[in-house]
Image (cartoon, rainbow, N blue to C red; front, side):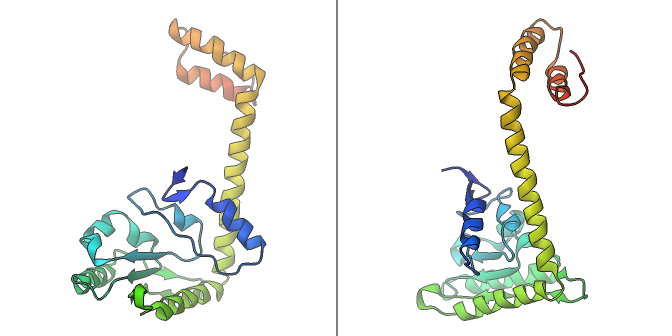
Length: 210
């Protein structure tokens, strides 16, 4: 499976397909996150960071950059030992400003809530969905939701153009020929990777030669 940022490489396509079918609430689950696996923040309107007491010290979560993308923090298995300590760590992090509160164009501030859940019993689930609805309303009231979605579509178009352009470039006969001759010139010391790359780019602009 092609995974990027804890997500399948086709996650965006699937989300767009579900949206086209009229699904108004779509939940995207990642397979876990690390310091560079925060792509989900570019795909959704609201990010819920889910933690459990067994996940370890809350400091690890801060190192992973999760505080920066979290709109809602959730501690599941809140009846387990260590849950109170984790809650305390999260509250301290918010108080220390490790998460920048969102401010919409109306000057309203979104303060990240911490929701306790025990999913196996359904405890706190309604509160979690209520927080999601409140965050949606917060974004929508100032048209910030529209801005976020427009930026997302702009990014998607650019990514698709870049992908299609790359495929077209590497199939171009002139590029193929230039790579073959360029490799020989690199081996002989007459050219560099930089100069060959520049010449390839120039095929689609100024006709710079090696």
